[in-house]
Length: 154
Image (cartoon, rainbow, N blue to C red; front, side, top):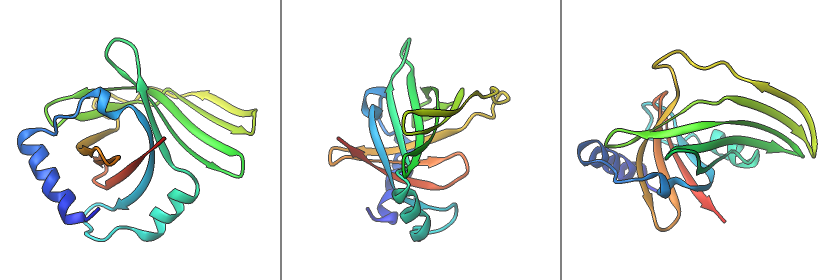
């Protein structure tokens, strides 16, 4: 996916909305490419590293029209994951979320399981959703300004 094409799609989403709904987001998304804030070139090393450690965002239906998110990385049987609720807000829309729990597992052995404090009001992370296509990719800009492209895995 070309960076300039994503920027065009982002401008369109800001003006007219992306049209994305919660159902469009449900799936297992593997991080593919990352463009740091203010850069037109993808960060090849970070993209490679995040793919190698299986960086993923799993989105499922939650309760009362909400979503449930799981953000995880895995390496050699060691998995670090954050889980919590999310919801869509606004016309673009924003996928706002908060992680309520962190877990570290090795195989089937739970090494760490902790509840996380709620972020301050207005401090929750979000993704400004840009576009999703039928070929199986999702593009969004994070709260920190970076642009990310995920691919849908079966």
